[in-house]
Figure 1 (cartoon, helix red, strand yellow):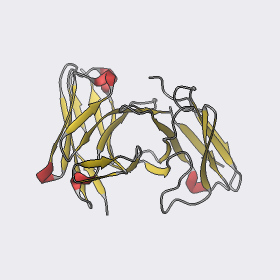
Figure 2: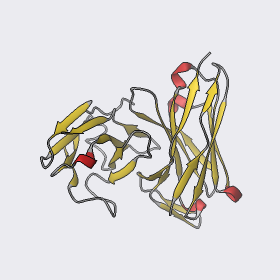
Figure 3: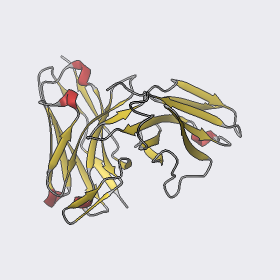
Length: 110
Length: 127
């Protein structure tokens, strides 16, 4: 199973909206609703920020949102903050015990 | 609070095996699946497998079939991951993570996402 495709990097200024994409195919992203997103500061444990495409766990700020259109899932940070500078990974559960990760996107807020 | 505490870094020679541990605390150990995920330098994460603590059932990613074994010791709330026949390509940070779903009695309802993660364990394979 091929990895999902994420841009290696993304950037934005504080207060701007930033969107990170996670592209698959009609057989994966386009077929399943179990897309989740994780924020990962190097050296720390990853943190779940979006699950089932667009749901936020308790405690995650509402500036984080998720969406899906066709074969592309997206994470949007509305009003990015300096603390949001991190690596972001998408993950898809495809059933039958198969999870597929994206390659990760390094977000810079400058 | 929920915590997953992993064992420390290891260095192995090619061809050797490595065993890592992941001790869970702050919740009922048998209630949630535990996954292993690894991230090699410069690459995206890779899902390796999972264990259902309540019965010990395991599921492994196809690329690890035959050389990955995940076990658990319920009395110690600990999951173990053993990887055999190591090569330099196994050099990575290995994470355990908890599925956000739950098990009740003999029925399990996985959430298909990972709500808590360990701190990661660096495995270096080098001659």
